[in-house]
Amino acid sequence: MPSKNKSNELTLSRVYDAPVAAVWDAWTDPEQAAKWWGPRGFTITTHGKELKPGGFWRYTMHGPDGVDYPNKTIYHEVEKHKRLVYDHGGSDDRPPMFRVTVTFEEIGEQTRMEMTMAFPSPEEAIQAKKFIKTAGGHSTWDRLAEYLTKEKNEREIFVINRSFKASIDTMFEMWSNPRHVSRWMAPEGVRMEYIQADIAEGKTSFFKMTSDDNTLVMHGKIHYLKIKRPDYLEYSQSFSDEKGNLSKHPRVPTWPDHMLTKVLLTKEGDDQTRVTLTWEPQGKVSAAELKAFVEMRGSMTQGWTGSFDKLEALLGTEI
Image 1 (tube, rainbow, N blue to C red):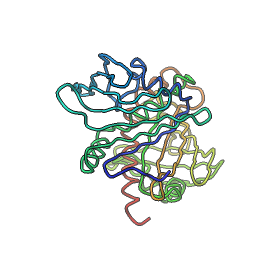
Image 2 (image 1 turned 60 degrees about the horizontal axis):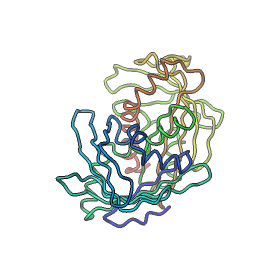
Image 3 (image 1 turned 90 degrees about the vertical axis):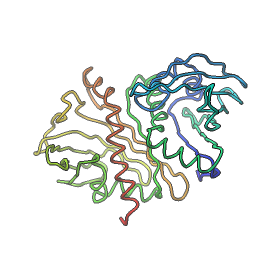
Image 4 (image 1 turned 60 degrees about the vertical axis):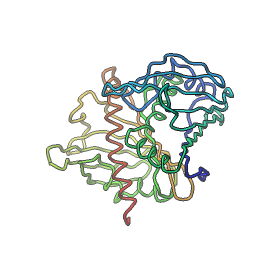
């Protein structure tokens, strides 16, 4: 949908694979919120909550570096399963940073969440946008997707979203043209080259990744299961040796052998596209492999963020 936000507002849209009641409860029940609220690596402790107009939610966010961040949310509107309006980022000794309006709309068995953050000025909105990106604030909504999937289907997944200033057709090209993929998909500090490039349904690509200091060399395969222009790709990815035989992760021997990747592209106006990437172990997975997958979500976020930074830079050049 085209963005209609004002210059002092930031907007965010997500679609969750869960009914609206489940999404609402995950938001409003402190016990559930404690399992996903905040950027990756953060935890929260709720000290009190009154979910009603004029009510509050008092909690402390605990950063991975040990720093605590006291918060007091003041609710202005509470319409069950539909709408919340509240002031965010304040505490007893500081005013709120911005006002949040979030709506929940049921679409079949899914829920669309639309959020607007209104700041006192356009300058503060710009600064907040930079801070949210640097602090990994959008991973909060990725964690919500992971939590809802686990609650609904008892599956562990990894989710990461990123919006890019590019049309959906351009973004599809960046994911489906080997010449472009090889320039950005490797994490920061790693370069990628195709040994065999075949991005098509039922086909398999074989690639090599090498660290910039040449101390790490990895090979892998991507088998494409579904490609639907202009908005969806699905593929299975695995590590291999230099001959293309299945092998283990070079640094994490308990990493799952096969990863199922789903890439959904969503149009956000004429010149912006959101990428929603979902990763999960595929096939038979041991308890140790599942544990490694769950514990490495932070590293996965870091790795994909580095790749997306490269993609963002590439989109700013002639392709």
